[in-house]
Image (cartoon, rainbow, N blue to C red; front, side):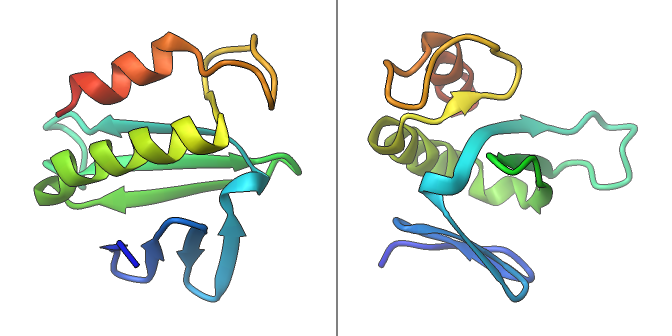
Length: 109
């Protein structure tokens, strides 16, 4: 199983594990991956923000060295599970993946 390690969790093909919580990709409504500005305490790392359909929000600090690998992996996961981007109100669970999300993930490679 492909996984990217976080300090307290793993991300994989079937879902994401954060501490003692497992969230299947099917339960995630949206995700956003962004890199933090140099004024942020966690710079040069990034944040992966996940929101579930029950509106639970998880923010995970991602090491910068995982940037390309995580972006590539998320792009594949998003294509399979058709997740919607955080800032896009359109689309549906089973609809086409919005190009804005793919371009934002592709641009961080």
